[in-house]
Image (cartoon, rainbow, N blue to C red; front, side, top):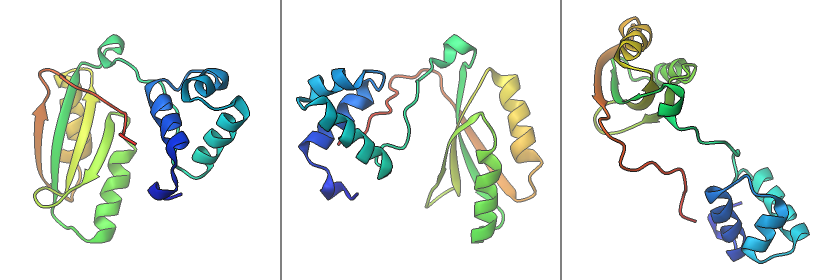
Length: 155
């Protein structure tokens, strides 16, 4: 399904689910002004086509002891495609790495990392970066305050 295949009903469904995916099908159908069977069919199509990747609960990090967010720039020594993919898989296996982006120009990767505190970050940095033979440079920025966090995509 391409973005052009989304009609107004699909867009209303996606917007409503991004605000609250825990609502029942009947509640969602009422909110987007379609019948419950139509709503269920549309959500199923959006899911099967990959537009809806998954539905999750968003956890407040500080409520579960995760108080440090770091934005980490990584530059590799060797940027061959297989070495880049190898590094992506390597960091993707780490639970504290929430997001990983290949970027250009500048560093090769930008990671969003969340850990309990600075000692936990140091342990992670040693485990992931200091011991990895292809990591040339690491630059970390630590969040002092989160003024906005949004998962919703405008559709």
